[in-house]
Image (cartoon, rainbow, N blue to C red; front, side, top):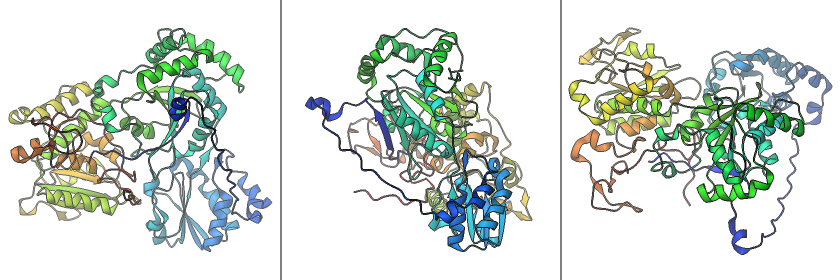
Length: 601
């Protein structure tokens, strides 16, 4: 119930000594067996001069996998092929249709024009309704397994080729060799991430490419990102507010001093030095080193001091990562990684702008806003709940919807399921707000420490003196002739949406009533411990919660040390990481993964 997830990592570097240091000699490692992957695409397709000429009009650095698509369409003997592309790739849709019809043998090709946010939006149902018998989904990974789709589907990741040497030079210029770096990015750049890791394995103390299965290694979604340390490693070390001020240059200066290098110069803002002076390592490194001092950065630590610096870093923090470098042209996916790793300084490498920037996230504001929403929803736990099942592709996993409905009923509430393609505050307002509206707390409510504290934190984080308010006695409106105002109903008191968690995290304050994620519903109803620490169950249910000694080292006579028999938390627990495991196979019971969990061995 703690929201943790099993993480598989790929690590390279010399940060861990292992058994070889204890034995005094490094055992000879067996060479990895060479694997040869033979292309299954027939040569008459992959080497067809006419097909190669037709694909030459497409951008060469975008791998749209045209020969593979043609081969799969022929294999499936598809008569009508549907193409689904995100907005950034729809400019190539008509060209791809022409190629598939000409070389794939399809009689017709249709383009799905609805918005596509991610792999969860794969719309095989609409494609089948249009008469298509094969769907090609571009730009996202295999989030929804092919055995869950209505018609045969093909995922095309659209790997984008970038200037990997420039990316490597930029990291070498801006980070000391004693650092343990974490590399990740969107699915389009995972090949570049792995190539960079392999090329820099001997340069940095360690390089980790994390994985939250079923995603690919290094891939991050806007709702699913790996936590690089167990929750306990973050909880009890620092408050989140204390982790926000971690400064790159201050950390580098301290590490540089430990390694015998000169400390970094003062100054500079959020910009980070980037290498732009040519393609060769020597020219880029020389020009970049001079520029580093000019903007307050520092050149990489000398190779002679790398061993001493690595030893000092290992003594100070073991093999904990020092920085995250995320490859993408936007922040949406990066923010998920930052939420899941609040103590890890984050940097974004933009392969188009060829720049490296320090990225920050308002952890305090987000956590306070979501705590306020959960606290208000917990006060209406026995009333009417709206359960939104997203119908945009496969966003709304029916299993997760059923789980939420069971939780609400177990807490004494009444669930009402809504099917919504795109969730907006206007649609929610049309249903009406019950007693869970985001109104200003009354004097009695202000006496509650959790509500008052969350409200104060939110006001402080947003720079205002109050939070958004609404009339909790608003009249319920009719929707298409169907009114929910009958039998004295006052609308929906609180909501939980099984569509995209970021709708609640990013836009939750725009809704009139609390709009929770499935994870937040667990917290609000007392089935999971809150991320802000302690146990929330006695706040919800009063003195009916039992505490007692349980597993591990949680033993003691005081209530602060005893474990809640409902959610598993202790009153004295510190802050926890807000989990981003919506599609992680090993995520919490609230997640929406289509992959079955593996049984414990």
